[in-house]
Each structure stands twice: as C-alpha cells, then as structure tokens.
Length: 93
Image 1: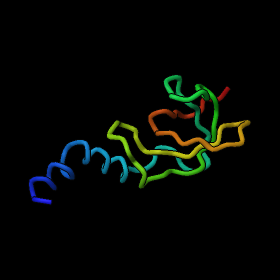
Image 2 (image 1 turned 135 degrees about the vertical axis):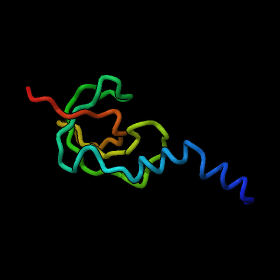
Image 3 (image 1 turned 120 degrees about the vertical axis):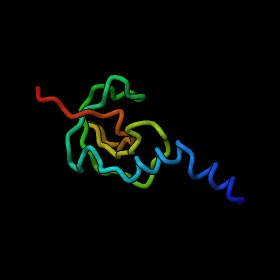
C-alpha cells in the first residue's frame, strides 16, 4: 500500500470510531442484568438478560455504542450477540 492508500483505509473517521469503541470501557460488567431496548433488532425486545461477556476486539460498526456483548436472555437456552446500543440497565419491577 502507498501512504495515501493506508491513510484512506486506516485513518479515516470511521476507522477511528471503531478503534475508540473497541478500546472504550464496557458499560455493562459481566453478570449484570440488562434489558433489551424496544429498538433492538431481534425478537427479545424489552426482555431481561444477563451479560455473559463483552467482546472488546470484535467491533464491526462505527455507530455509537457498537461494543458487542454476549447475553443470555432469561428463560432461553441460547446465547445472543448484540451491541451495547441495543441494551439498557434493567429496571426494577
């Protein structure tokens, strides 16, 4: 790669957002009870889940809150991968 090509690929504003999301501290610690937002893209909208793991090195989106998590929805057997922007703190009921 030439220097210009490298800068265009690695130093653009989207690459910088991905890197900042990857190195940011997770908003939810492992074992935290969270709730899926209504805008979540899967069928578990507004349900409770437990954070299993924060995948810090697998950020693929330049969106705000793009840090990926592995969660286990309450009452389910399968883990679900989602991004931080689709989760919120669980409200006490």
